[in-house]
Amino acid sequence: MRKYAQILLLSIRNPAFLMLSLGFIASSVISKGFIKMRLGFYANEMFTVQFVFSLWLCFMLGLVLKRQFANHRASILPGYRAPHLVVAFLVFVFFVIVVWIWEIGTKVNFEISSAALFGVHTTCLFMAVFIVYLGFLSIGAVLVFAYLICLLISGESFAFVEQLSNTTHYNIYIVAAIISLFVFMIIRLMKIKEDSFEYPFLLSWTEKSLLKNQLRASNLVYSFFNPFKHIFKSKQKNSVYPKYPRAKNALIRSIHWDINEYREMRGTWCLIVFGTPAFIYFLKVFQFGNEFFANAYFNFLLLSVAPVLIALGSNYKKMMYWAYDSLKPIDKRTFILEKGFGFFRDLILFWFLFVVYFAVISSAVLNAGIMATVKFWSYLLFTGAYGYLIMAWIAYMSSCLKAVTVIFNGMCLCLLTMLLMQLVILDVLSIVFCVFISFVSANILIRVTYDKYCEKELGTMI
Image (cartoon, rainbow, N blue to C red; front, side, top):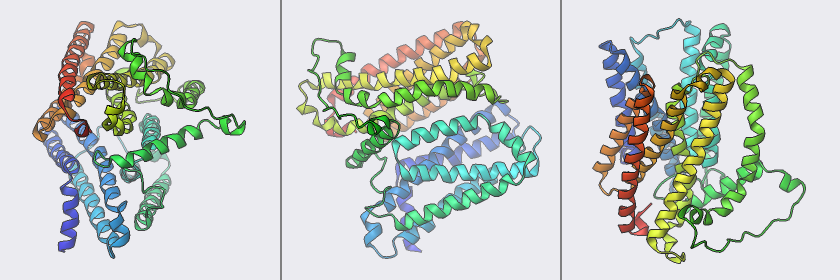
């Protein structure tokens, strides 16, 4: 019994896992309390927080499993794997029980059959197991594509529930999928070794040496979407850095160190260009009853938060080289300034892509009238300004040394995001004012963060 307790402590001692667990339990209790008090608005907002915590908690559980099994001790120590699997399963069951207790006495505000409700429960369970497996894989490129695919599927959530009501045999397929994925995960966890394909991939701020494998995974994805290079056997060009542009502005200088990555993304850009007609056809053929794509006002988190997460993920693997700053022909302050431009350059790029696809194109196809209003464009501008503020705030938190300061700022950021989700009810002038406040606040945070990073040792930046 002591052995299982020690294994459980491995997860509890992980600060991120502990914080997410406590946040999930607290949000569940608070949202249930709001439901009992019939405070619908606050219950709905707290349920959103609970849902976000549950997603991150499943992903973090996968990361914890990866750290325990992608380890030399799993291959050397006898009887290592089975107890770790038992503890992980019990932890997962505990969080499922929390959801089950939360749901007791809670009713949905629309009619749904018992078969469809069972299908919804099993689908949520499948997605939870699937997200745990994504965390276990920890391959950055796979996470991005899985996120986009799940995003498209979620747009048909109500149609999916209706289909479950009309066709009950789908429940059998969902249960079979859960069992298959669960058994597959157990098999991989019991057999994973150094030569397994999952072993070297790990998303963790402490295991910087393993970030090299994220580069390898990205190269595999790019080669998959660029088959013509292999078909026609085009001659591989040697990667040559141009002369460092000292006299040009900071934005141009920041591109200097990333120029090879931009070359590798040509295939991805071609995929985006040729995929646009397919996306438009997809919107025209499938009519979305929940207005997920038809109304950009429903996609605040998608347009403001998602680009920040992807920009951070795309730059995360580059940070492993920051300790070699002394080898660059520039001083430390210039180096940090250029890296900051790189982060926000990618943020603007991803925000622009999300706005074009999930606001402009989708609205033009499904709800063209909304594009004629000033409020629509000012709201889109606000999502960009607030994304800028989120990136600046996260950068500021990364420069803080005290954990209490980071936790307090994180809670304030989450609370502010929840409040601003209701910004759509305000008029145009109020939205423009929020744009101005977000932009000014972000600039202040960036200035403070820049000064802090200039004072930090390079080895403590990541």
